[in-house]
Length: 175
Image (cartoon, rainbow, N blue to C red; front, side, top):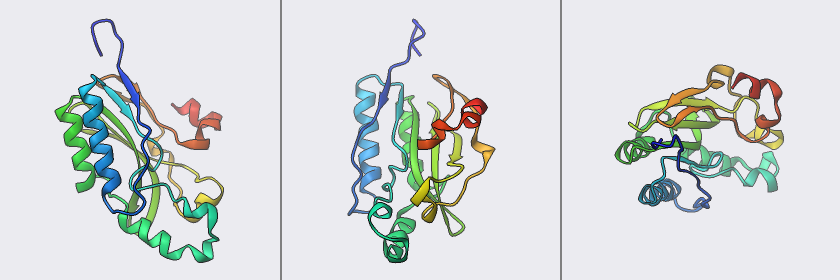
């Protein structure tokens, strides 16, 4: 936050790399670097950008999406974990708050998760989508309300919701 109390923020709109494991995370890191060069203090990335949103769930019946689901699981990140350590290091290097949507792998289940890193690289929030929407229920497990909160960051108080959760009055109220 600058002297005037304003924050330079960016909403990143980048396409995931659906073919090369790790390439989407490389693009996220490059985008953070580019934003830092422009003086960005807060950058927000889309829902489950890393490694990619499960687009296959729109076009293939669940009975036929096993291989795609397994590939997504294998490329998903752990929170905390080595893949996201790169993002944390960039947040600290550039004193930038980073909000990133990931597919989180935890004990055999995938979650639609949002993470918030503070300007010193600390993980401030790990929040799982409470109820995946429609076809997403075949991909992700249900989260819980433990992440429905706001956190104090270097740019102010921040909370996170994903997709249809913005239409949920109680989720909005919790934040």
